[in-house]
Amino acid sequence: MSHRDAYEQKLRAKLDEWQAEIDKLKAQARGADADARIEREKEAERLEERREEVRRRLEELREAGDDAWDDIRAGAERAWESMSDAFEKARSRFK
Image (cartoon, rainbow, N blue to C red; front, side, top):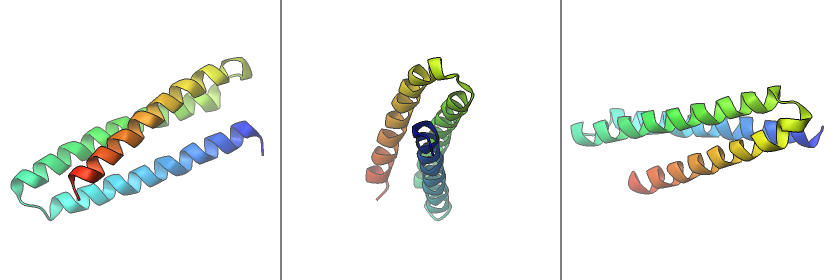
């Protein structure tokens, strides 16, 4: 497996993990009181938008030629870091 394939596989696994976290947040929202439910639903929506951005970056990576791959990977990593930060903030807020 090439370095590129391994990187893409790692990012796909993280996307799946993030989706599971979003689903968990949605489930928590269903069991919360009205104010907490609204807050959790909004946070889940924001996280889904960020996850979609990372997914789009992954697709760009898959389609990129070798010359552009490093540049696109840098953008994907920034999106990844932003998503990770958003999840950490959501986890700490809703624990």
